[in-house]
Length: 212
Image (tube, rainbow, N blue to C red; front, side, top):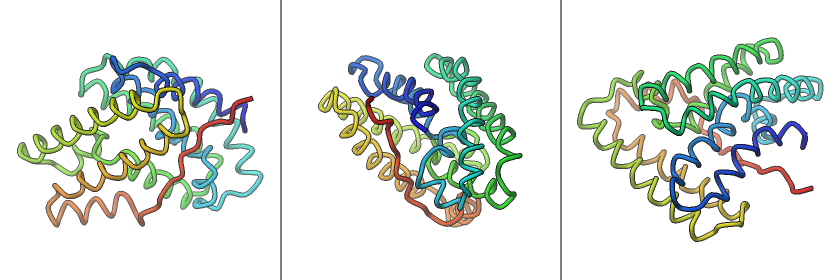
């Protein structure tokens, strides 16, 4: 498991240990490895939620490593991408990941993995925001929420530089807080659609590879 997770860690550790300059973009790139299907399926709490068998977990490790290795160039492009380009990149990474895992997961497991991905990315995912047909006013509110989250991200990294576990803990709490604000700007109909897309709420326990 540790060997495969190094592929994710290559992005995440660089983000977590980065200085405050450009921290928001670097962290976005790093966290993308954890939040996509290839990273999520490696997470032990996700594996339990999907009820993966030992055989499926072993297959998922191999496939996930291939997914994340293949997506390295795409992850790198996120830093300088426009919002429109970023949406296309995230969609490509997610689509490739789910396609690669199709032979490993049962249909109901694949569906739940997509729901968990929607939950963890929230309206940060431009494709989810697009599906919900946000108004101009909602889009402006979303931008403000994300900008505030970006500033908090910089503060977390600056104040806890070098402490990966502490940063991950605070980033997880920030992600949850930000998602609640995202859902708060939605209309009742949009919240209903969001619930259908995200499924039952589940708190994913993000992990970092242990140091060797």
